[in-house]
Image (cartoon, rainbow, N blue to C red; front, side):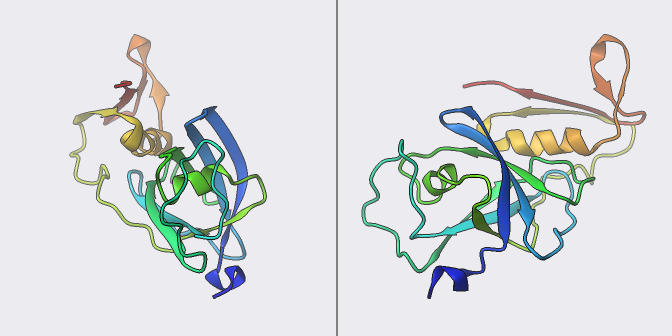
Amino acid sequence: MKMAELNLNAIVVQKHELTPRLMILRIVANAWQLPDFCPGQFAVLGLPGAAQRYMLSEPEMPPADPHKLIRRAYSIASSSLTREYMDFYVGLVTSGALTPRLFNLDIGDRLWLSPKIAGLFTLDDVPEGKNVVLIAGQATLAGCRTCGASASWRTRGAFGPRRTTRTYSCAAIPL
């Protein structure tokens, strides 16, 4: 199977390296409509095994099959209110199969984005009028961010962002 046959259906339009080991990728669909999603859900990203690895990654033993798509789930970090793009927080796993390849992407590069969105880490079951505190480490920061980015906020006093009927707070605690 050639790389063109792997249907790399999305394009990197922004890459923000927060640290040498943490970045935000902004991805747009290439000739298709991004699916609807709820805050807290995830999509699957993929690249072929032939894609180059990031310079800070460890050598891959054994090497990945260059003709197969390497896929991993990533929480969507952008607001569910926008349908133009999706943001993903990606932490570098130097010995990993996919993250070293994602870190090597540049603006304009293509990758695979699943057309199906999944995940149950949503606020759908939180009753109206109840407060929610979201505390996140690296792996769950994106889910917390999208929950906040997708809510209709208003600021009230020193307590930070609030909705009229639910309170959302998100804090990242480095471990």
